[in-house]
Image (cartoon, rainbow, N blue to C red; front, side, top):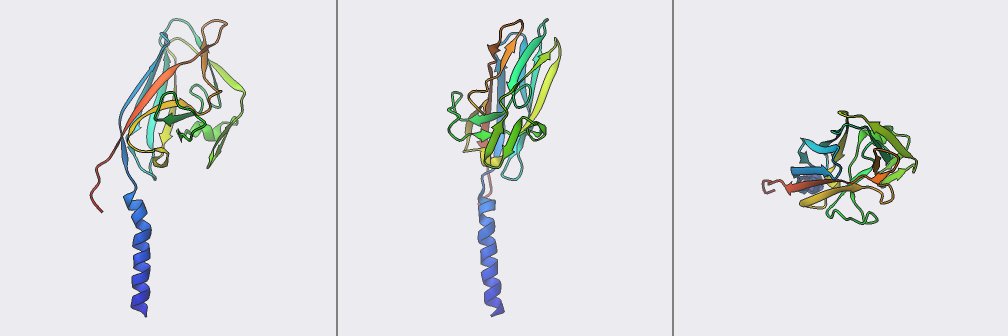
Length: 191
């Protein structure tokens, strides 16, 4: 009787673990970033390239004012990049489920409500100035459950109606930055 109980318990344990063992692991192969604004340099540095369900990839987004004049940047939730997500199309419809990028700033902001099922946002914009030579940076994480498979993912605003904007004078213009993240599945030993 004890042997049967042991065999049953062992089989259930192995079956339970098989889902975890079979989860795909990914690697960030490449990131590209640019902005269409001459006086702003936008770059993304991959800090942790491997991504699984338990361990996220980590990126540092950097925005630098390379011009001679101050630039005001306006966004929602957190400054300067706002709430962002990844989609497999740069022109994604954000009403379709996206892979959210998480940030410690989301947790500490009183303008962002993070829930297991998504995020909420206080619609009050945040405007700050980036002086010449000054940099703003933010660390983001991409968890394995947010990845839908291999391919190139594009960073987009989490909400369509919260596009960032910038001003060098009195007129605000949509802030267009572009970032692509190429993700590859890692080779795994057969189970």
